[in-house]
Image (cartoon, rainbow, N blue to C red; front, side, top):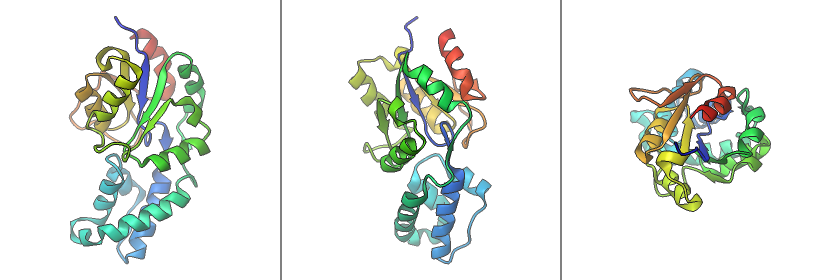
Length: 215
């Protein structure tokens, strides 16, 4: 069997717990528009498909006319506060140095690239990733597999044999499946599997190195 050579990570719910900062920025935006705010758990359920979907879900269908204003308010506030409370999940800081010695690592997220880079830098893990692709890096977002194919071409790898996608959301499973690469789902993040079946399931990032050795 061909050895895995690259690991692609989702960001929110996989490497970082960002729900508090997302909640604060969404609720700031809603309050500025004199709209009802949401609980943290409600906003957790809105995360996973990019900032525009997050804002639209938070607004609800009856307030979609305020989307443009809400988007501007959110982007300005989150840009200033995206690292206030965001932290790494347990095990992430410990395993990344080990993984980067054996694999090419990348972040493939639907979060805006500028926010992703700021968070990765602030949390001290940006140097471990050869590439960071955000939701605005390409014309399409996950689950479109364009990001995986771009990295595969750039690194000269076969997605079906040499790359693996790690995430906590159905979007991450689908993007991996559409690219033909294996998928690892992390339980306990922000997202859910929906009706999709990943190749492997783990409950902590600390399980990943041993799992990869067995593939």
